[in-house]
Structure formats: structure tokens, C-alpha cells
Image (cartoon, rainbow, N blue to C red; front, top):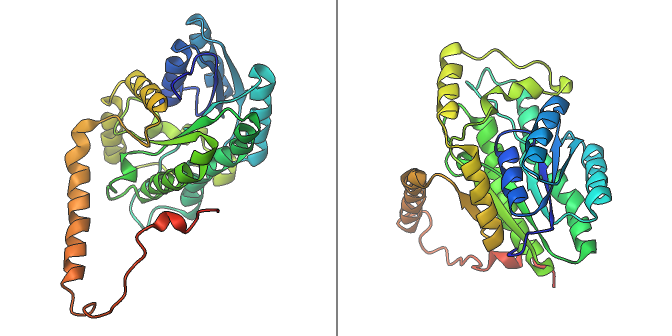
Length: 294
């Protein structure tokens, strides 16, 4: 989407962190901005920030785990600006810990926000973009934890791997509609993700007190992370160039290469496996045909 000026971006988790930084970057480029967030006080503060920068923006209270809430937020966005061209499914939370200590409610919370929230946001806005007939773009926030899986972060990692997979698949589905899809995979960014329990919905119960040493270490990584405004500018670049993968921490390339080297080594072992020799089976090479609608 080369031309963004005058178009509208809808951003979940938009009142802080990466979401607010994307809003600033889009706004500076001449876009209208809709901030969707579960925290009304944070929304008010974020809107004041954008308005001070002369950015056209509105805020809508929105819980991404509720389809009705997202639908209502979408209606308000369209009512205010007429159309929505860029949707950033950005709202996210973090939870993890030892296998025996992560509760079912923790899994439910992380999956509902990080995974189902992206599904709902996409399902709500695809028909809107289709009807507009002007193309569009989705930016789904994953993480470097969607490329590699650090121990102790399994609920978070699993959802971020899923967001990468969905984004890869949806890109092929939506391309005929001139709708692009990007997946944002940042490393540590200076946000409040380590405090995400502050906005935990009541139906998931209270957050568990983490081990102080572990929580302090996590906070240190985050608070010493990349300036989120850098991430916002990188996202704007990627939307304009219709990039699939958006990386913000190029120094993490060796970590990803190490993972994929291990995968390639596993294929080498499979080729040498006595159990598989002489099977005569050949896998289809064009997997895109599986979901293609003729």
C-alpha cells in the first residue's frame, strides 16, 4: 500500500507500547487513526498525545476476546472515518512459567487475547475491506517468540507461532482482493508487556504472583528494549512495501538461523533413515493448492 495518506488505520492494543507507536507513525504519514484498547484511562492519555501531534484520531474501548466488542468498535471507526484500510491486530498479553504452575486459566487468557483476538479482528474487517473494494492491509503482531521458543514461555510462544502461521496462510487467501498481510516479529521492545496482568479480564481470574527474580529479569529485558517508535516506523515501511515478515531486531538473525539449521539437519537424518528408504512416496510440492479456491 504505497499511498497511505488520507486512509484509516485501526489498531488494537493501541493505547500504549507498539500500538501507540504505530499510531504515531501512521498519523505522521497523514493517516486517520482509531485506537482500540481495553483500558479507558490509557486511551484518554494516548488520544491526548496524538491530538497534540495534530493527528486525526479517535479512541474506542474494545476487548479483543469479544466479537461483539470488536464489531462495535469497527462500526464506530467506519462511522467516524468512512472506511478502514489498515488493521493492526496488536493487542497482546504474556504469561508463562514452569509446566506445573501455569494454570488452565492462564492458557485460556493468553490464547484468547493473542490468538483468538487476531482471528476475530481479521474476520470482522475482511468483509468490510471486501465491500470497500479498495484493498487494504493487516498487520498481525507476533514476536520473535513466534520464530524461536524460549523455555518457560510456552503459552506466549504457542500463540505467537500461531499468529505467524495464520498470517502466512491469510496472505495467500487475501492477495486476490489486493489485501496485504504482514506479521510483526519484534524482539524486546520498551513496552509494558511484562505488566500485562494489569488488564487481565475478570473471567480469567487473578494473575499469579511471579517469582521475583524471574519477573525482575523479564522486566529488565523489556525496559532496556528497543524504542517502540522505531518499531512504528518499521511497520509503516513494511505496509508500504507489502512485506510479509517484519523484523525489528536484525541482530537476532543467528538465533533464527540456529533453529532452522536444526530443522535442516533433521531432514538430512530423515533422508538417511532406514525406516523411510524405499517408501516410494512423493509429497506434493505446491501446498498452496490445498486451500486454493478455483
